Length: 294
Image (cartoon, rainbow, N blue to C red; front, top):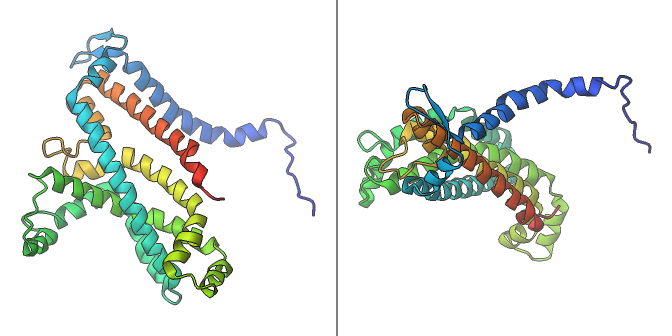
């Protein structure tokens, strides 16, 4: 069977088709990134009247700043917590859907709804539920002797932002896991069951290895999500507090640049954050992908 090939009579037509996407990429991604790199070598006064080229002074001061080191540690804990909680929860829900036959469509629709909620709204919802005064969850925790107060406890605040950020991302991961489970041939699972393999052994020897491409893709997506897209959740819940306990790298960029008006340091932090995300993505594709079974 021969595959039909599409030939363009005009040599400029392919370039015209990709021009809108290239324009969006250049205007909204490449140009701001280039501006951030340029501003990372400059130092401006608070009023923007004077700009000085300072070479790598912004980078030197940044890496010697203890608050930046704290933000780096907070980001590592936060990113790992969000990725693990959202991926594991989504996988469990996807396995439940895969076992459900009659109500699977209704079940899937209800689980997808949280993805349509804006991050700031998701943060506010969980802030109300975890509010020490009016929240239902602190009230329930009081029965087991735990006094919840995310405005005073850094541990409580970190738990709050991790749960709120993960809840928003579970729906996205759930859709991909459901699609991956449906693509696994049922004959393989049935053959393993006939051979005497239990549910756990079937999952870890057949289902999960075949889901490794989907899991790897979602691992990269969730890492980027935790690094960038969780800003609104943190801003709506803890605003980086208490005592910098939830002040992630992306939120520190906002605090130093838009609140502290230190544009040079803020641009430097954004460049470093971009390099960190690129390096993590490279590591994931270079080493973790080796264990992925296609």
